[in-house]
Length: 193
Length: 286
Image (cartoon, rainbow over all chains, first blue to last red; front, top):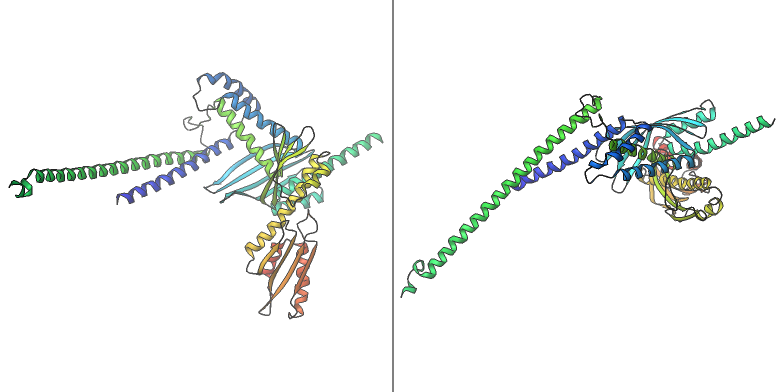
C-alpha cells in the first residue's frame, strides 16, 4: 500500500532526524570538551571579532551581544565565587554517554574554599523524565589538602561512599570558615605573644 | 416523434452521453493526478531518507574520528583548526555556563539581577539531587525577599528575621539546612512507598513538612504476619532522622515480637527509613 510505504519512510525520517541531532550534539560536546583557550586568546578574540564584524551574515549575534553575554556570565561567576568562598581553579568534563533521555558526564574539578584546596572526580547522570531532569552523582572521589586530619579523612570517605557531593560543599564552606577563623586566631596570638 | 425514439440519438441523449464521458474523463484525470502526486511524494520521501542517511553516516564518521583524537590533522574535518574569533568566544561562553552549572551542585548558585540577586538553593539526598528553591532578593535600600519558591511550612520569615540583614550567607545556610532536611525526610518516605509497598499495610500518613509519619507494616514470625504500627516524629527541623519513635504491635502478638518492636524502634532512630526497611528484607524471621 502506498500509504503504508509513506508511513515507513516518514518514521525513518523522524528517527534519522533524532539521531542526527544527537550526533551533532555529541560532536559539539566533544569539540567543547577537548578544546581550551587561554585568557589572552579570549581577549584577542573579543578585539578581532569586533573588527571582523563587517562581513557577518544575518541571524548571528553581533559581537556586542556576545561580548555582553560573556561579561554578564563572568560577573555572575565571579560574584558566586566571592560570595560562597568557593573558587574553581580547573574544571573539565567529558560526555561518556548520550542518548535521547540520558546523559552521563565525567567531571574533574579542582579548587579551593578559603584556604582549603580540593580535587574532585565524579560522574553525573542526568535523566529526562516527563516533568523534569533528574541528576545523580556516582563514583565520587575527593582529595583534600588537609587530608592528614583523621576527622577530615572520615568525613571524606563517608561522603565518597554515598556520593554526597552537596553535603561535601556545604560542610566545606563551614569547615573552611572555621579553619580560617582558627588560623587567623592562631596567627593573631602568635603575633601578639 | 423524434423525442420518443432511442435516447442516444435525441439531442438530450447525446448531451447526457457527452456529460457522462466528460465525467469519466475527469475522474480518470483526477485519479491520474492523485497517483502522480502520490508517486512524487514517495519519491520525495525516499530522496529525503537517502539524504538523511548520508548526513547521519557522515556525522557518525566525524564523531568516531573525534573519539579517536585524529581531528585537526586534515583541517577539513576540524572546525577548530583555524578557530574564528566568534568560535572562541562561543567556546568561552559555553565553558563559563558549565562552571555555573557546577555551582548548582554545590548547593548555592545564583545570578545577579538589576536590583539584587536571585539565589537558587539546591537540595539532595546523598547523590540524588532533588528540588531547587529560588529566592529573588533586592539589595536596596536594605536586603529584602522580593519573591521566592520556598514552601510555606518552612519558617522562612523567622530565619530571615534572624539573619537576612546581618549575614546573608548564614541566612542561606540555615535555610538550606531546613530545605535539605525536609527534602531528605520526604525522599525517605517516598522511597519507602515506592520500594516497600508490599510491607506497608494501609496508607502512609504524613504531614506536609514530613516530620510526622504514621503507618502500619507487616512483620512475619513463624510463618505468620503481624502488623506493627509506627509513629515517627522528627523533632529537629534540620534533621532527617526521627527524634521520637513509637513502634507497637497488637495485643495478640507473641511476646517475642515485643523485642523485635524495640529493635525496630532503635533502628529507625539511627538509620534512614528506606534503608531500615531494606535491612528487614535481608533478615526475615522464620
